[in-house]
Image (tube, rainbow, N blue to C red; front, top):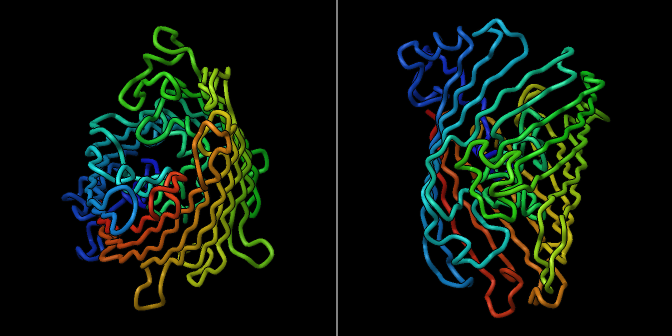
Length: 415
């Protein structure tokens, strides 16, 4: 999706740089250039933008209860290029405000563990969701990012560092968010962090990026809503002395072997908290591994265009003595552009199998399979309408809960 790349709010550069000269139907934001204000700000290194996503869904059959539900997510972003604004080369300041309505059904009605909507949140929020400073050094070989960050914007996100992340267009949370990393500091709980990224061979057609992040782990097991906090629990043991570590190696390529661009990532994570075992007792710390892949299969619009057919997938593993989900296997395809008549529409299919814990005390009878089909109608560059269907087999692995069929429609408006 446009605002929640990998099921979590991150900056979307399509917000920025709206030409005033275009007709409304071609504007990339419904407010246009705001009388020249956007252009004036951009000339001084300041980009602003906002987006609102509304979603209606209903459990049509099966699940726990056949109910409808509504979600609304509004985000506002401000980005400062410090070279243009402050004559400081290589720096970026980013702020994102987030407002979201409380969930009134959703996965509580369908019964699924993978959470069929990546907008779902159990409580209302009005917060400064991200606030960080980023600095690149040594010709972009080294990148440092410090502040309040959504970890899913940088880690365990299929195609996160590509120009287009196909999995982020899906609505099922597991498409962009790895369910086995159940303590990942991501929507709705971003966290204070220090991140380091090293790209030793930034080649034009092939590059390797090594990344590491240290995050406030107070939201993992201590019940602290870090998304609405600043640094009060980071490097402080008054409420929590837990930390979340994550490291990832990503290989990205352009036009290799006759195919357009793609990426492959391998990562691992570890949380230092004390976790209750499903069969009783506690473990000091827990962790896991994951892998993601994205490949653009066709590029009818050329190498610089996002149009074409994409295939993507991910795998995740965590300790099933602690985590309800031991393994996740997912695959998806997304077609961007349906010929000359609908060049910006999208059609997608997705499947995700959650292999639930085999520990007897966990009480799972089966594993959970989630399927999604979507069609995104691009009404204008600033407005899209996205109907979709999802089917969840064995929600929460409970043999007493019928398979669930869910209908959705999502409306996105970029300002």
